[in-house]
Amino acid sequence: MSDRAYQLFEEQQKERGIDLAQVKERLKALKVETPSWGYADQGTRFKTFQKVGVPRNTFEKLEDAAQVHKFTGVCPTVAVHIPWDKVSDYSALKAHAESLGIGIGAVNPNLFQDDDYMLGSVTNSNPAIRRKATEHLLECVEIARTVGSKDLSLWFADGTNYPGQADIRKRVVWMYECLKEMYDAMDDDMRMLIEYKFYEPAFYHTDLADWGMAFNMANKLGPKAEVLVDTGHHPMGTNIEHIVAYLLGEKKLGGFHFNSRKYGDDDLIVGSINPYELFLIFYQILDAERDADPGVAANAARIAYMIDQSHNIEEKIPAMIRSVLNVQTQLAKALLINFDELREAQERQDVLAAENAVRSAFECDVTPLLRAVREEMGVPADPMKAYLASGYAEKIAARGKGGASW
Ligand code: PSV
Ligand code: MN
Ligand code: MN
Image (cartoon, rainbow, N blue to C red; front, side, top):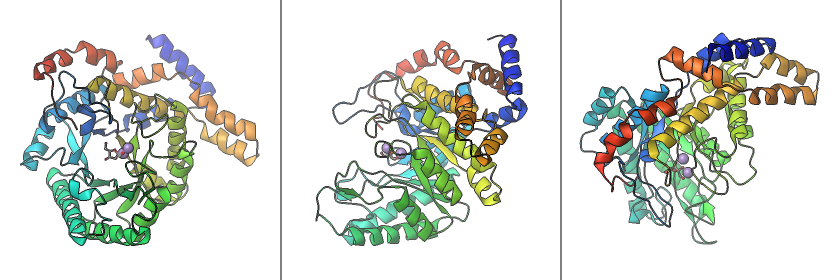
């Protein structure tokens, strides 16, 4: 891409009233956390494909994640899932991450892969099982402390398959009691990110089925608890950006798990199915960053952007790089919205002009902008090409097949 392409882009954006210096600064501030499990072998309930070169343990997962950061420059942290990433020495894990130039991000407790949790974890009618689940949550707070993480990310598979199977109202109370114990054990600067999902693995009811239930739980717990929006966890046709705007208005948007879906919780590469949705999510966030209420703007500024994908047919590292680039691309496009023009159109109640102010930004080609920003950040202008040419895939092939499966 030549300087000419960038010059042309700059001229076009000037005409649209966009200050590229600000756009570039905002793009450089983006941080996207990648999930340790996205580097492992993953599958569907029909088959897990074993790939050559997959990390054999959490230390190697961090090494792969460090490559994504090296080539994109925007992925300095990695989320861990316990016990998938259980190690005997978490200080050593932290030190390993730091030696690679990255850090450990959100700690995700796992309350869905133990036989004891078949009928629920924090909602189980058996108090001994609820105790066991709570102890795991407390253990994760301690792990977060050791690895220097401030975010505890919670998702529960709890739910029922049949009408009458359990007492729905009692389960809400039990969940609250367990989470309250965890909440009280957290440091003041830690955050509890509460994720919701409307079905799967439970098919009749899920205890935290939607944003409203997660929001209510977070409100009851207090200011350290916020809602996490996983873009794959809604029924068909849901307006996710509306949920985002609403939660921002309430100052309760904790973070995202980005991925794409076509039908269910597909966990596909973010931006691969409906890039406009991702763009519209960023539109709401950038709009909130400009809110006159400093609390709303502060919420927009502290959002944790995380990827939650399950790559089962894709090459792991390139799939992660693609996801990160797609997030960056849609943020870049949303930054080209002329918010003054938009406001004026809204005030005039000019529906078509307002819609045009948003859509016209999406229609811009941001390739020259992203290349320029990456060069200024000291990373390759084309991270995917650079990674593929780096020889890392060939190097990790020595790990062979049969790596970690989560
Ligand atoms: C559940 O579908 C989920 O989105 C949660 O975030 C889990 O932690 C993750 O996927 C596991 O892959
Ligand atoms: Mn998720
Ligand atoms: Mn999911």
